[in-house]
Amino acid sequence: MQVSYTCRGALHPARNLNNFKQSFGSHWLNLSKRFYTHHAQNYPSISISNNFPIKCLSYRLSDYSNIQNEIAQDKIAKYLRPSLQNWNGEQTEKKQRQTLLLLATPKHAAWLETHSIQALLDKLMLPVSHQNASELDVICACVDGLAPSIAELSSKIEHNREGISILLGTTTVDSTDLLYGASAPAVTSDQKCSLQFHINHDDNVLPYCQITTPLANTIFTNGRRSTLLISRWQKKGGNLAIVKRPSHRLKASINLSISRSESFFDIPVSPLTFPRKIQSGLGNIVRRLIIEGSSVVPASQELEKAVIETNKTPNKNHDNNVWAMIMPPGMTRQEDKTGHDYSHIKELIVRGAKLYRVLSGGGGWGNKEGLLALDPETSFEGQHFAGINLPNNNTKYPEKYTDALTNIAQEGASIQFYRAISRKPSGITQHRCTTENQIVIGSISSTVDEIVSASDPGTAFIAGHFGCVSESGIFFQSAENLPTKIDVPHSYFYGQRSNATI
Image 1: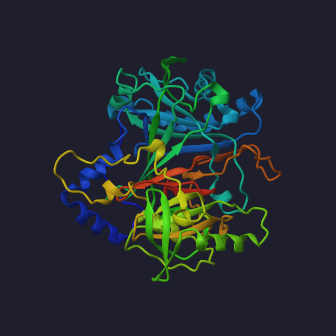
Image 2 (image 1 turned 180 degrees about the vertical axis):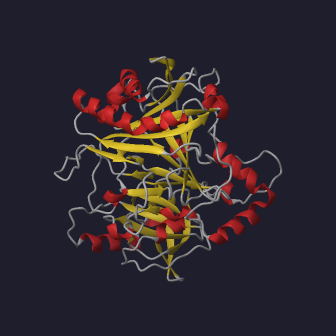
Image 3 (image 1 turned 90 degrees about the horizontal axis):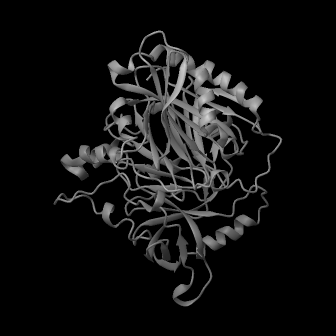
């Protein structure tokens, strides 16, 4: 699999590179390798290659219909076919195979079925002039929704988007052959599947981040908790044949290289309180906080007052959920709790702060007065150390990797409470789209009770745009820190290329 071992993160403050190297000494490179290879073996992996122009698209679709799908297939094939034609015949020499990643929302899950894939590829993979057969690996996944484009992020329209999104990349021939062998892990129908996006940057110095996106619940679609399939197709002499029939996989890795100057993390929250020191807590339970350096109060006391005050202002879009940002000892930021500028949130998370949804708390008396329970889930499927392999030798790594999750409410850490707010378009328009090839990954609220509004864009073909959103939140992890769950509605990671090829 094409896995980049070293790269730099766009949101890494420059000073963190030296701190990181000092903390890990000569082991920092090995750790960065483990960060990108752990859980990657025997899983489908798609990379953006330097050998051909990146191609991606999103197709917003309304209700599923054969006529609409045929029109969509024709347009998709016309857009992607030039890349296949320019690249065909080089895979043997370069030991690479083109791979197509197809994401579909539950309403359009029929796109992931074998007959639909065959219909699309039959139009996409034209007969080749040379004697070598044209082969294509196809990875299919069902996601909760499509990601908004940069133009949509610049507006206040917030709703779920239905349809499909496609990314065309490459995998190495040797590694993809392993995916169909006996060593490929079996997947049961009740297992949750995910996509792991490894975000690299142009200068390739230090690993940046991994974003894990849980897939949609497809129980009522095909009887499986989630759906992730891989298959291999071949076209030779005008005949399309399936070489490897679709098989289920647990996760797939997507290795993306983006421009450092054209990426950002957007988490729309507003502070309810000032940062306070945690005086006592256990696990995911916060018990006491220190106010203004001296007074010790129950954890929920200041938050309850802030929520009551906030609820006095009517707001039809108001979200009653509360999140807690916990910053390790030594990391503080005194924010005006009335401000709506949330640009600093991404910086805190990259530096090691963690975001937790407040599940319950408040009230009570005695030892239970004012306790707050935080969501203990920090990584997908409880894999708290996913991406970090602690060695079995005597190597000493920072203690934060061994005890951070045993006590979320760490004594001496700072905690600040936030509420979700409507996203500010002004914070996004400054990242102007200068070229195509946009990648957007995000989190949305549940769409179970959502009613399609008049502002729904309907059918639309968006060239050069790829992405998806999850109702379960996304899990962010940098090489320096443990993962954190980001489930604030309409939180997005956005990246793009500054040129046409990578």
